[in-house]
Length: 484
Image (tube, rainbow, N blue to C red):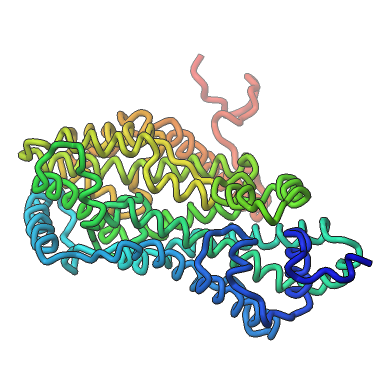
Protein backbone atom coordinates (compact mmCIF):
# COMPACT_ATOMS: atom_id res chain seq x y z
CA UNK A 1 0.00 0.00 0.00
CA UNK A 2 2.94 2.26 0.66
CA UNK A 3 3.95 2.03 -2.98
CA UNK A 4 0.56 3.36 -4.07
CA UNK A 5 1.17 6.57 -2.13
CA UNK A 6 4.59 7.24 -3.65
CA UNK A 7 4.90 10.45 -5.62
CA UNK A 8 6.87 11.11 -8.82
CA UNK A 9 9.86 12.31 -6.82
CA UNK A 10 10.05 8.99 -4.96
CA UNK A 11 10.67 6.89 -8.05
CA UNK A 12 14.03 5.22 -8.60
CA UNK A 13 16.08 6.10 -11.71
CA UNK A 14 15.12 2.74 -13.25
CA UNK A 15 11.41 3.42 -12.71
CA UNK A 16 11.78 6.94 -14.01
CA UNK A 17 13.45 5.65 -17.16
CA UNK A 18 10.77 2.99 -17.71
CA UNK A 19 8.05 5.60 -17.31
CA UNK A 20 9.81 7.83 -19.83
CA UNK A 21 9.99 4.96 -22.35
CA UNK A 22 6.30 4.13 -21.84
CA UNK A 23 5.35 7.73 -22.54
CA UNK A 24 7.52 7.83 -25.65
CA UNK A 25 6.06 4.55 -26.95
CA UNK A 26 2.52 5.71 -26.34
CA UNK A 27 3.14 8.92 -28.24
CA UNK A 28 2.80 11.19 -25.23
CA UNK A 29 5.80 13.57 -25.45
CA UNK A 30 4.06 16.50 -23.81
CA UNK A 31 5.51 17.71 -20.57
CA UNK A 32 8.78 15.78 -20.85
CA UNK A 33 11.54 17.90 -19.34
CA UNK A 34 14.64 18.07 -21.62
CA UNK A 35 16.88 18.46 -18.56
CA UNK A 36 15.46 15.21 -17.18
CA UNK A 37 16.13 13.49 -20.50
CA UNK A 38 19.68 14.88 -20.57
CA UNK A 39 20.33 13.47 -17.12
CA UNK A 40 18.98 10.06 -18.09
CA UNK A 41 20.67 9.84 -21.47
CA UNK A 42 24.11 10.90 -20.26
CA UNK A 43 24.95 12.30 -23.70
CA UNK A 44 26.13 15.61 -22.18
CA UNK A 45 23.94 17.63 -24.52
CA UNK A 46 22.48 20.97 -23.60
CA UNK A 47 18.68 21.10 -23.01
CA UNK A 48 18.15 23.20 -26.13
CA UNK A 49 19.65 20.42 -28.23
CA UNK A 50 17.45 17.84 -26.55
CA UNK A 51 14.39 19.95 -27.20
CA UNK A 52 15.18 19.51 -30.90
CA UNK A 53 15.31 15.75 -30.35
CA UNK A 54 11.88 15.90 -28.72
CA UNK A 55 10.53 17.86 -31.68
CA UNK A 56 11.86 15.18 -33.99
CA UNK A 57 10.20 12.45 -31.94
CA UNK A 58 6.90 14.32 -32.14
CA UNK A 59 7.37 14.51 -35.90
CA UNK A 60 7.93 10.76 -36.00
CA UNK A 61 4.69 10.13 -34.08
CA UNK A 62 2.84 12.47 -36.41
CA UNK A 63 4.24 10.71 -39.47
CA UNK A 64 6.13 13.77 -40.73
CA UNK A 65 9.70 12.68 -39.93
CA UNK A 66 11.50 10.04 -42.00
CA UNK A 67 15.12 8.94 -41.78
CA UNK A 68 17.90 10.68 -39.88
CA UNK A 69 17.55 14.35 -39.00
CA UNK A 70 21.10 15.50 -39.74
CA UNK A 71 20.34 18.98 -38.44
CA UNK A 72 20.93 17.50 -34.98
CA UNK A 73 24.51 16.73 -36.01
CA UNK A 74 25.04 20.25 -37.31
CA UNK A 75 23.69 21.89 -34.15
CA UNK A 76 25.80 19.70 -31.88
CA UNK A 77 28.95 20.24 -33.98
CA UNK A 78 28.47 24.00 -34.09
CA UNK A 79 27.79 24.06 -30.36
CA UNK A 80 31.26 22.57 -29.75
CA UNK A 81 33.05 24.49 -32.51
CA UNK A 82 31.78 27.89 -31.37
CA UNK A 83 32.27 27.43 -27.64
CA UNK A 84 35.24 29.78 -27.40
CA UNK A 85 33.51 32.40 -29.55
CA UNK A 86 36.73 33.28 -31.35
CA UNK A 87 36.78 34.40 -34.96
CA UNK A 88 39.53 35.14 -37.48
CA UNK A 89 41.33 38.42 -36.85
CA UNK A 90 42.36 40.76 -39.62
CA UNK A 91 46.02 40.10 -38.87
CA UNK A 92 45.60 36.33 -39.09
CA UNK A 93 43.73 36.63 -42.35
CA UNK A 94 46.40 38.89 -43.86
CA UNK A 95 49.26 36.60 -42.78
CA UNK A 96 47.57 33.51 -44.23
CA UNK A 97 46.66 35.31 -47.47
CA UNK A 98 50.33 36.16 -47.95
CA UNK A 99 51.35 32.57 -47.17
CA UNK A 100 48.84 31.20 -49.67
CA UNK A 101 50.06 33.62 -52.37
CA UNK A 102 53.70 32.56 -52.02
CA UNK A 103 52.73 28.89 -51.68
CA UNK A 104 50.85 29.12 -54.99
CA UNK A 105 53.96 30.47 -56.73
CA UNK A 106 56.16 27.73 -55.31
CA UNK A 107 53.68 25.03 -56.30
CA UNK A 108 53.78 26.35 -59.86
CA UNK A 109 57.38 25.14 -59.97
CA UNK A 110 56.72 21.79 -58.28
CA UNK A 111 53.65 20.54 -60.16
CA UNK A 112 51.92 20.97 -63.50
CA UNK A 113 48.47 20.73 -61.88
CA UNK A 114 46.73 24.09 -62.22
CA UNK A 115 45.80 26.54 -59.48
CA UNK A 116 42.37 26.69 -57.86
CA UNK A 117 39.56 28.78 -59.38
CA UNK A 118 38.81 30.39 -56.00
CA UNK A 119 41.34 31.90 -53.59
CA UNK A 120 42.05 29.92 -50.40
CA UNK A 121 40.91 31.44 -47.15
CA UNK A 122 41.20 31.49 -43.38
CA UNK A 123 38.06 30.05 -41.75
CA UNK A 124 36.66 29.64 -38.26
CA UNK A 125 35.93 26.28 -36.71
CA UNK A 126 32.23 26.82 -37.22
CA UNK A 127 32.72 27.62 -40.90
CA UNK A 128 34.74 24.42 -41.30
CA UNK A 129 31.90 22.41 -39.72
CA UNK A 130 29.32 23.93 -42.07
CA UNK A 131 31.51 23.33 -45.13
CA UNK A 132 32.44 19.72 -44.38
CA UNK A 133 29.38 18.27 -42.65
CA UNK A 134 27.62 17.16 -45.88
CA UNK A 135 30.49 14.79 -46.62
CA UNK A 136 30.55 13.44 -43.06
CA UNK A 137 26.82 12.76 -43.30
CA UNK A 138 27.27 10.87 -46.56
CA UNK A 139 30.00 8.70 -45.05
CA UNK A 140 28.12 8.05 -41.81
CA UNK A 141 24.69 7.26 -43.27
CA UNK A 142 25.27 3.49 -43.70
CA UNK A 143 26.37 3.19 -40.07
CA UNK A 144 23.46 5.28 -38.82
CA UNK A 145 21.02 2.94 -40.56
CA UNK A 146 22.73 -0.14 -39.14
CA UNK A 147 22.73 1.20 -35.57
CA UNK A 148 19.07 2.25 -35.80
CA UNK A 149 18.04 -1.22 -36.97
CA UNK A 150 20.11 -2.89 -34.24
CA UNK A 151 18.58 -0.71 -31.54
CA UNK A 152 15.11 -1.64 -32.73
CA UNK A 153 15.91 -5.35 -32.60
CA UNK A 154 17.68 -5.15 -29.23
CA UNK A 155 14.85 -3.20 -27.60
CA UNK A 156 12.32 -5.75 -28.77
CA UNK A 157 14.31 -8.60 -27.23
CA UNK A 158 14.96 -6.87 -23.92
CA UNK A 159 11.56 -5.25 -23.30
CA UNK A 160 9.01 -6.88 -20.94
CA UNK A 161 6.21 -8.96 -22.41
CA UNK A 162 3.58 -6.36 -21.64
CA UNK A 163 5.43 -3.86 -23.87
CA UNK A 164 6.01 -6.16 -26.87
CA UNK A 165 2.81 -5.18 -28.66
CA UNK A 166 3.64 -1.53 -28.20
CA UNK A 167 7.20 -2.02 -29.51
CA UNK A 168 6.05 -4.06 -32.49
CA UNK A 169 4.30 -1.01 -33.90
CA UNK A 170 7.09 1.40 -33.09
CA UNK A 171 9.65 0.41 -35.72
CA UNK A 172 9.72 3.79 -37.38
CA UNK A 173 9.96 5.53 -34.02
CA UNK A 174 12.94 3.46 -32.91
CA UNK A 175 14.69 4.06 -36.21
CA UNK A 176 14.14 7.75 -35.62
CA UNK A 177 15.50 7.47 -32.08
CA UNK A 178 18.49 5.41 -33.21
CA UNK A 179 19.20 7.76 -36.10
CA UNK A 180 18.94 10.76 -33.81
CA UNK A 181 21.33 9.15 -31.35
CA UNK A 182 23.91 8.55 -34.06
CA UNK A 183 23.41 11.98 -35.64
CA UNK A 184 24.09 13.57 -32.27
CA UNK A 185 27.20 11.43 -31.87
CA UNK A 186 28.36 12.43 -35.36
CA UNK A 187 27.94 16.07 -34.42
CA UNK A 188 29.96 15.50 -31.27
CA UNK A 189 32.83 13.91 -33.25
CA UNK A 190 32.86 16.53 -36.02
CA UNK A 191 32.68 19.30 -33.43
CA UNK A 192 35.73 17.93 -31.62
CA UNK A 193 37.46 17.48 -34.97
CA UNK A 194 36.95 21.16 -35.75
CA UNK A 195 39.07 22.02 -32.72
CA UNK A 196 42.02 19.96 -34.02
CA UNK A 197 42.30 20.12 -37.80
CA UNK A 198 44.63 22.76 -39.23
CA UNK A 199 43.42 22.75 -42.83
CA UNK A 200 40.74 21.42 -45.12
CA UNK A 201 42.97 18.61 -46.37
CA UNK A 202 44.17 17.64 -42.90
CA UNK A 203 41.68 14.77 -42.81
CA UNK A 204 43.03 13.06 -45.94
CA UNK A 205 39.62 12.46 -47.49
CA UNK A 206 38.03 15.29 -49.52
CA UNK A 207 35.68 16.86 -46.97
CA UNK A 208 35.96 20.43 -48.27
CA UNK A 209 33.83 21.57 -51.24
CA UNK A 210 35.45 21.02 -54.62
CA UNK A 211 38.19 23.51 -55.40
CA UNK A 212 38.34 25.07 -51.95
CA UNK A 213 41.33 25.30 -49.61
CA UNK A 214 41.31 26.65 -46.07
CA UNK A 215 43.33 26.95 -42.87
CA UNK A 216 41.89 27.32 -39.36
CA UNK A 217 43.95 30.00 -37.54
CA UNK A 218 42.53 28.95 -34.15
CA UNK A 219 44.10 25.50 -34.54
CA UNK A 220 47.20 26.71 -36.37
CA UNK A 221 48.48 28.27 -33.15
CA UNK A 222 47.97 25.00 -31.25
CA UNK A 223 49.80 23.00 -33.92
CA UNK A 224 52.87 25.26 -33.83
CA UNK A 225 53.09 25.45 -30.05
CA UNK A 226 56.32 23.93 -28.65
CA UNK A 227 57.79 23.39 -32.14
CA UNK A 228 59.99 26.50 -31.85
CA UNK A 229 59.51 27.22 -35.55
CA UNK A 230 58.75 30.75 -36.81
CA UNK A 231 55.05 31.19 -37.53
CA UNK A 232 55.68 32.53 -41.04
CA UNK A 233 57.57 29.38 -42.06
CA UNK A 234 54.96 27.15 -40.46
CA UNK A 235 52.14 28.99 -42.22
CA UNK A 236 53.93 28.79 -45.56
CA UNK A 237 54.52 25.04 -45.29
CA UNK A 238 50.96 24.24 -44.23
CA UNK A 239 49.53 26.55 -46.90
CA UNK A 240 51.58 24.74 -49.54
CA UNK A 241 50.38 21.34 -48.36
CA UNK A 242 46.76 22.49 -48.22
CA UNK A 243 46.91 23.93 -51.74
CA UNK A 244 48.56 20.78 -53.14
CA UNK A 245 45.79 18.61 -51.70
CA UNK A 246 43.00 20.86 -52.99
CA UNK A 247 44.60 21.21 -56.44
CA UNK A 248 44.86 17.45 -56.85
CA UNK A 249 41.18 16.82 -56.17
CA UNK A 250 40.21 19.76 -58.38
CA UNK A 251 42.32 18.40 -61.26
CA UNK A 252 41.29 14.74 -60.95
CA UNK A 253 37.52 15.24 -60.81
CA UNK A 254 36.92 11.50 -60.60
CA UNK A 255 39.10 11.15 -57.49
CA UNK A 256 36.62 12.63 -55.00
CA UNK A 257 33.87 10.16 -55.92
CA UNK A 258 36.43 7.36 -55.98
CA UNK A 259 37.52 8.03 -52.38
CA UNK A 260 34.04 8.57 -50.97
CA UNK A 261 32.73 5.43 -52.71
CA UNK A 262 35.46 3.32 -51.15
CA UNK A 263 34.77 4.72 -47.67
CA UNK A 264 31.08 3.95 -48.14
CA UNK A 265 31.90 0.45 -49.39
CA UNK A 266 33.66 -0.14 -46.09
CA UNK A 267 30.86 1.45 -44.06
CA UNK A 268 28.14 -0.56 -45.82
CA UNK A 269 29.74 -3.73 -44.48
CA UNK A 270 29.38 -2.63 -40.87
CA UNK A 271 27.01 -4.62 -38.72
CA UNK A 272 26.42 -3.63 -35.12
CA UNK A 273 27.49 -6.25 -32.59
CA UNK A 274 24.02 -7.21 -31.42
CA UNK A 275 25.38 -9.50 -28.69
CA UNK A 276 27.35 -6.61 -27.20
CA UNK A 277 24.35 -4.31 -27.56
CA UNK A 278 21.99 -6.78 -25.89
CA UNK A 279 24.48 -7.46 -23.12
CA UNK A 280 24.86 -3.72 -22.54
CA UNK A 281 21.08 -3.22 -22.55
CA UNK A 282 20.54 -6.02 -20.04
CA UNK A 283 22.67 -4.30 -17.40
CA UNK A 284 22.00 -0.69 -18.38
CA UNK A 285 21.58 1.55 -15.34
CA UNK A 286 19.84 4.83 -16.25
CA UNK A 287 21.43 6.52 -13.23
CA UNK A 288 24.92 5.66 -14.57
CA UNK A 289 24.77 6.15 -18.34
CA UNK A 290 28.50 6.65 -18.85
CA UNK A 291 28.94 3.07 -20.06
CA UNK A 292 26.45 3.54 -22.90
CA UNK A 293 28.02 6.82 -23.98
CA UNK A 294 31.50 5.30 -23.78
CA UNK A 295 30.44 2.36 -25.95
CA UNK A 296 29.09 4.69 -28.61
CA UNK A 297 32.17 6.92 -28.61
CA UNK A 298 34.73 4.12 -28.57
CA UNK A 299 33.14 2.03 -31.30
CA UNK A 300 32.76 -0.92 -28.90
CA UNK A 301 29.42 -1.80 -30.52
CA UNK A 302 31.13 -2.40 -33.86
CA UNK A 303 32.26 -6.03 -34.21
CA UNK A 304 35.49 -7.31 -35.72
CA UNK A 305 35.90 -6.55 -39.41
CA UNK A 306 34.71 -9.14 -41.90
CA UNK A 307 36.90 -10.42 -44.72
CA UNK A 308 35.06 -8.16 -47.15
CA UNK A 309 35.64 -5.16 -44.90
CA UNK A 310 39.31 -6.01 -44.52
CA UNK A 311 39.68 -6.13 -48.30
CA UNK A 312 37.80 -2.82 -48.65
CA UNK A 313 40.01 -1.26 -45.98
CA UNK A 314 43.15 -2.40 -47.79
CA UNK A 315 41.95 -0.83 -51.04
CA UNK A 316 41.09 2.40 -49.26
CA UNK A 317 44.43 2.56 -47.45
CA UNK A 318 46.28 2.13 -50.73
CA UNK A 319 44.19 4.85 -52.38
CA UNK A 320 44.65 7.36 -49.56
CA UNK A 321 48.35 6.50 -49.33
CA UNK A 322 48.77 7.20 -53.04
CA UNK A 323 47.13 10.61 -52.61
CA UNK A 324 49.02 11.57 -49.45
CA UNK A 325 52.32 10.33 -50.86
CA UNK A 326 51.96 12.61 -53.88
CA UNK A 327 51.08 15.54 -51.62
CA UNK A 328 54.16 14.83 -49.47
CA UNK A 329 56.53 14.80 -52.44
CA UNK A 330 55.07 17.90 -54.10
CA UNK A 331 55.10 19.82 -50.80
CA UNK A 332 58.70 18.78 -50.16
CA UNK A 333 59.80 20.02 -53.57
CA UNK A 334 57.83 23.26 -53.34
CA UNK A 335 59.19 24.15 -49.89
CA UNK A 336 62.80 23.11 -50.53
CA UNK A 337 64.01 26.68 -49.97
CA UNK A 338 62.24 26.92 -46.61
CA UNK A 339 64.81 26.54 -43.77
CA UNK A 340 62.50 24.66 -41.38
CA UNK A 341 60.72 22.53 -44.00
CA UNK A 342 62.30 19.24 -42.87
CA UNK A 343 61.38 19.83 -39.22
CA UNK A 344 57.80 20.78 -40.09
CA UNK A 345 57.43 17.72 -42.33
CA UNK A 346 58.63 15.53 -39.48
CA UNK A 347 56.09 17.15 -37.13
CA UNK A 348 53.30 16.41 -39.65
CA UNK A 349 54.42 12.78 -39.98
CA UNK A 350 54.68 12.36 -36.22
CA UNK A 351 51.19 13.79 -35.76
CA UNK A 352 49.90 11.34 -38.32
CA UNK A 353 51.73 8.36 -36.79
CA UNK A 354 50.23 8.82 -33.32
CA UNK A 355 46.72 8.92 -34.75
CA UNK A 356 45.63 12.29 -35.98
CA UNK A 357 42.16 13.77 -35.98
CA UNK A 358 41.17 11.92 -39.16
CA UNK A 359 41.92 8.52 -37.69
CA UNK A 360 40.13 9.30 -34.44
CA UNK A 361 37.02 10.59 -36.22
CA UNK A 362 36.76 7.75 -38.71
CA UNK A 363 37.54 5.19 -36.01
CA UNK A 364 34.72 6.29 -33.74
CA UNK A 365 32.23 6.72 -36.58
CA UNK A 366 32.76 3.72 -38.81
CA UNK A 367 35.53 1.69 -37.19
CA UNK A 368 37.98 2.80 -39.88
CA UNK A 369 41.63 2.97 -38.82
CA UNK A 370 44.29 4.31 -41.17
CA UNK A 371 47.94 3.46 -40.68
CA UNK A 372 50.73 5.69 -42.00
CA UNK A 373 52.99 2.88 -43.22
CA UNK A 374 51.61 2.79 -46.76
CA UNK A 375 51.82 6.57 -46.99
CA UNK A 376 55.59 6.48 -46.52
CA UNK A 377 55.93 3.76 -49.13
CA UNK A 378 53.73 5.69 -51.55
CA UNK A 379 55.84 8.83 -51.08
CA UNK A 380 58.95 6.80 -51.89
CA UNK A 381 57.26 5.56 -55.09
CA UNK A 382 56.32 9.09 -56.18
CA UNK A 383 59.89 10.25 -55.53
CA UNK A 384 61.29 7.53 -57.80
CA UNK A 385 58.73 8.33 -60.49
CA UNK A 386 59.61 12.04 -60.32
CA UNK A 387 63.32 11.32 -60.62
CA UNK A 388 62.71 9.02 -63.60
CA UNK A 389 60.21 10.93 -65.77
CA UNK A 390 60.01 14.41 -64.28
CA UNK A 391 57.13 16.45 -62.90
CA UNK A 392 54.98 16.39 -66.04
CA UNK A 393 55.22 12.63 -66.50
CA UNK A 394 54.42 12.08 -62.84
CA UNK A 395 51.41 14.38 -62.71
CA UNK A 396 50.02 12.91 -65.92
CA UNK A 397 49.17 9.76 -63.97
CA UNK A 398 46.24 11.66 -62.42
CA UNK A 399 44.61 12.44 -65.77
CA UNK A 400 42.56 9.23 -65.91
CA UNK A 401 41.63 6.61 -63.29
CA UNK A 402 43.24 3.75 -65.21
CA UNK A 403 46.62 5.52 -65.20
CA UNK A 404 46.78 5.80 -61.43
CA UNK A 405 49.46 3.69 -59.69
CA UNK A 406 48.27 0.45 -58.11
CA UNK A 407 49.09 -1.21 -54.81
CA UNK A 408 51.66 -3.35 -56.66
CA UNK A 409 53.31 -0.18 -57.94
CA UNK A 410 53.64 1.08 -54.36
CA UNK A 411 55.34 -2.18 -53.39
CA UNK A 412 57.67 -2.17 -56.41
CA UNK A 413 57.67 0.89 -58.73
CA UNK A 414 60.10 -0.69 -61.23
CA UNK A 415 57.46 -1.85 -63.72
CA UNK A 416 55.60 1.48 -63.54
CA UNK A 417 58.80 3.45 -64.11
CA UNK A 418 59.75 1.18 -67.04
CA UNK A 419 56.40 1.85 -68.72
CA UNK A 420 56.63 5.59 -68.15
CA UNK A 421 60.23 5.92 -69.38
CA UNK A 422 59.44 3.85 -72.48
CA UNK A 423 56.41 6.04 -73.22
CA UNK A 424 58.48 9.20 -72.76
CA UNK A 425 60.90 7.93 -75.46
CA UNK A 426 58.04 7.07 -77.78
CA UNK A 427 58.66 3.35 -77.45
CA UNK A 428 56.19 0.57 -76.82
CA UNK A 429 55.88 -0.13 -73.14
CA UNK A 430 57.46 -3.41 -72.06
CA UNK A 431 54.84 -6.06 -71.52
CA UNK A 432 54.48 -8.00 -68.34
CA UNK A 433 53.44 -11.61 -67.78
CA UNK A 434 49.74 -10.73 -67.67
CA UNK A 435 49.96 -8.80 -70.94
CA UNK A 436 51.73 -11.74 -72.59
CA UNK A 437 49.15 -14.23 -71.34
CA UNK A 438 46.30 -12.04 -72.55
CA UNK A 439 47.89 -11.60 -75.97
CA UNK A 440 48.37 -15.37 -76.29
CA UNK A 441 44.76 -16.03 -75.30
CA UNK A 442 43.46 -13.55 -77.87
CA UNK A 443 45.68 -15.05 -80.56
CA UNK A 444 44.43 -18.55 -79.79
CA UNK A 445 40.82 -17.41 -79.98
CA UNK A 446 41.47 -15.67 -83.29
CA UNK A 447 43.18 -18.80 -84.71
CA UNK A 448 40.29 -20.96 -83.52
CA UNK A 449 37.82 -18.64 -85.22
CA UNK A 450 39.70 -18.89 -88.53
CA UNK A 451 39.73 -22.70 -88.30
CA UNK A 452 35.99 -22.78 -87.68
CA UNK A 453 35.38 -20.55 -90.71
CA UNK A 454 37.52 -22.79 -92.89
CA UNK A 455 35.67 -25.90 -91.76
CA UNK A 456 32.33 -24.25 -92.43
CA UNK A 457 33.40 -23.22 -95.93
CA UNK A 458 34.61 -26.72 -96.65
CA UNK A 459 31.27 -28.14 -95.59
CA UNK A 460 29.50 -25.85 -98.05
CA UNK A 461 31.52 -27.17 -101.05
CA UNK A 462 31.42 -30.83 -100.02
CA UNK A 463 35.21 -31.16 -99.99
CA UNK A 464 37.65 -30.97 -97.16
CA UNK A 465 40.70 -28.77 -97.49
CA UNK A 466 44.01 -30.58 -97.55
CA UNK A 467 47.53 -29.38 -97.13
CA UNK A 468 50.85 -30.97 -97.85
CA UNK A 469 50.99 -32.17 -94.26
CA UNK A 470 47.56 -33.78 -94.51
CA UNK A 471 48.21 -35.95 -97.64
CA UNK A 472 48.26 -39.72 -97.12
CA UNK A 473 51.77 -40.88 -96.39
CA UNK A 474 51.77 -43.59 -99.11
CA UNK A 475 54.89 -44.14 -101.26
CA UNK A 476 52.76 -45.75 -103.98
CA UNK A 477 50.31 -42.93 -104.25
CA UNK A 478 50.30 -41.44 -107.75
CA UNK A 479 51.58 -37.95 -108.13
CA UNK A 480 53.82 -38.21 -105.11
CA UNK A 481 56.60 -35.72 -105.81
CA UNK A 482 58.43 -35.91 -102.51
CA UNK A 483 62.22 -36.04 -102.92
CA UNK A 484 63.93 -39.31 -102.13
